Length: 247
Ligand code: ADP
Ligand code: MG
Image 1 (cartoon, rainbow, N blue to C red):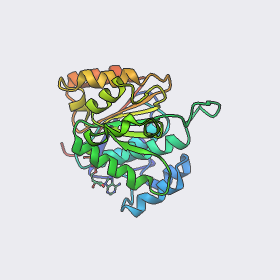
Image 2: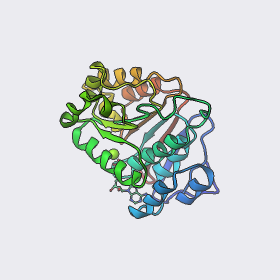
Image 3: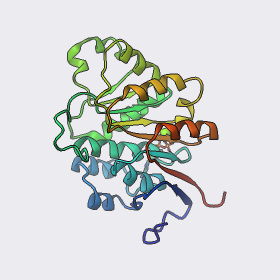
Image 4: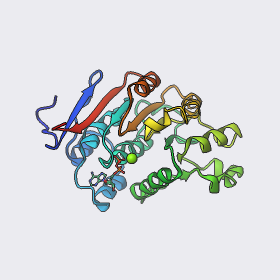
């Protein structure tokens, strides 16, 4: 509990895990506590985001402190921004890695979503938040599969938004290397970790082989069986559940 920051009244946030960081109930608090690229910060208000939702208030600090996260929060509560804001901050300021030559080379962040439509929405959100920065953001889809054959395209990706199958196929064909990925998000994880996609999702997680890979799992619901699978994928995670107060 963090009595100094009363949470938005309509939600309650249940937090589990070792030593969770205090929530930030204003975006300004994030700027004071963490390094956020100024363009990205300014794009928040440009896009009409005045203050964080509950999952953003609790989740963004967890991710900015390089922790693994399971975040369960209802549809429409702003889960996308909860993982994208830290994604962009972590690209600029990889904690613990200032001596690391490999920073800045190859794909460093991946967002996986179960459908094309959702991947497309997330990609659009990325473009809005990244405006003014030069990150190279790729949406993997059927349409882009052929351009991946070109080596110069392949070498110019910082961030990939993808469905599971597209990424697995590209990796199997040697068209994308995942060993420098530091930030992996599974969005709508109830579907990604269900039977239809589980093998592909696990293959992606295994292929992101960097020792400092940070993982975030987001969903509106997480059935017990699926939650076990997700916890097994994570190291020392924080688990956040946002629910309505009266339920
Ligand atoms: P979820 O993934 O939890 O279903 P989304 O990330 O799709 O939710 O966000 C739902 C809507 O809320 C989107 O239109 C998004 O732009 C908007 N939104 C997200 N965060 C905020 C915020 N902090 N302030 C205002 N609107 C927000
Ligand atoms: Mg969503």
